[in-house]
Length: 262
Ligand code: 5RP
Image 1 (cartoon, rainbow, N blue to C red):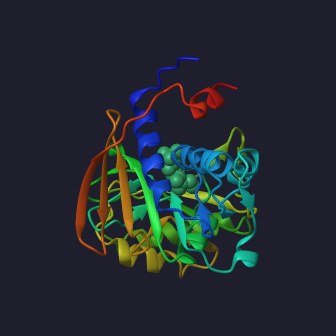
Image 2: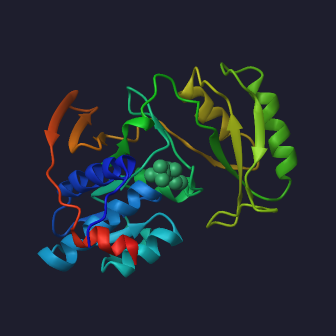
């Protein structure tokens, strides 16, 4: 069945397809969460089913776990895998140092634990995720439900002394109820517009009682694989200091696309 993907989805798919080339048989692989990561899980599933790739996947959310099982990937907990060879995940923003904002999908806690427990973190993204300075995307902060209003007030007070342009803090909702993470927590979204000092912000936030984790991923990402709708792909490696450009050919009649329509 012929199906024309929108350019943004093509870009996400291209990034995902190139990123799974980093995965080899025998690897323990962290599986990210979000629409770009879902492409990656589907691409990995195809390699498992059709090319005999043998991997163990550690999902970063219940959504990703469901999808991974559905496409044929063996799934284990991080406790069982202990340490991972690579994690591939999406991001809401990345800067030139490959520092990230993550958590738009509400999975930042498991995503950060899994990425930190990996030899390598590869981020897959389309060009809209690249920023000069982090912060246009609201920074997600996972907080325990107990006393969340007090935690919010403490965060607001802390923001007064930090280099940011906005200080609005909102509770993430799911309809009329607070959004609940896989760990049973709430998410506060910090509308900062600009984060002048992401290292300091990440450290200070995690010192506030009630904060479980924040969505700043500092010095965690090793490689960004940036996909474009026309098949171009750019690999930026922060450790090697290299930027590599490639082109991927793809046909939209691949099973992956028809699977998407089911
Ligand atoms: C989920 C995340 C996602 O990786 C991030 O929100 C990007 O998602 P998408 O690929 O759908 O744009 O951090 O918590």
